[in-house]
Image 1 (cartoon, rainbow, N blue to C red):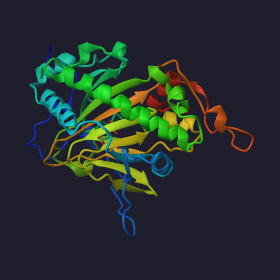
Image 2: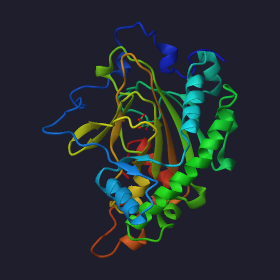
Image 3: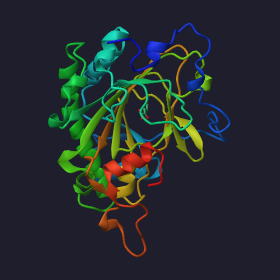
Image 4: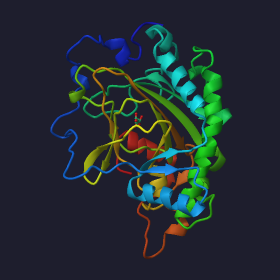
Length: 336
Ligand SMILES: O=C(O)CCC(=O)C(=O)O
């Protein structure tokens, strides 16, 4: 396999450089840097998923999803040791020699998302982001395309499969609380988003140290296409969310998972829950990594505001359409 087939940052950059290539320069007048604003900066809510009082739990999940569209969860039931192993095998993959990673490269002409690469959304100005990634599905088992799962380290497969099993329980608990928080039966939101056919897509983001973090982003501002995104960060800060007209830094809560409400839950809930606008900054010295899992409907699944939430006084705020059509419009920056 020739070098640089995917033009990842790892394949292009010498870390001793004191500037970055023009196509990575994203910060300009249209994309201002963080404004602290006046007064104390609010914190992304933290929810205790082990809360025994169900009413309290539903209130916390629904409140954070309506007000912020993002929250951190603790006591989620995934063993710390499994999260550490997930991080370890992911980092080991990214530390392999470039040619070994390129074995998993996404083909340049592929329309699929799976594989090792560097860009997900097309950018009308041809701009790039300071992040490489590996993408592959982890659930349901029938969706797994092991061609994109690293063989090295050897425990990669076992660890990721175990993580997927635990993650389903967390996801089910979140969907349940989100449904109850809308006054609906507990299964309604999960069933609306794909039910047992929900696709769990793992992306490992690798943000190498950047000589000019002031000029670029790891991932530019966006909301997720998914229904829900469940993310494990490493300890290096970088995630920012847009709240009350300013960018707020997500603090690192050891052992917590970060939950993003994605576009499909915003649509199903007819806007009662909001899809969070977020972006990531990069670091001059440290490698930042994150492990989001995007929970998405199957491609032909039709998603629209739930009938139970729509009436004459609450008309639908979104169109109902197949997920693949929503995705096409979003990725090509077309109106929905
Ligand atoms: O790295 C993060 O914290 C967020 C990643 C993200 O937003 C993405 O990969 O779409």
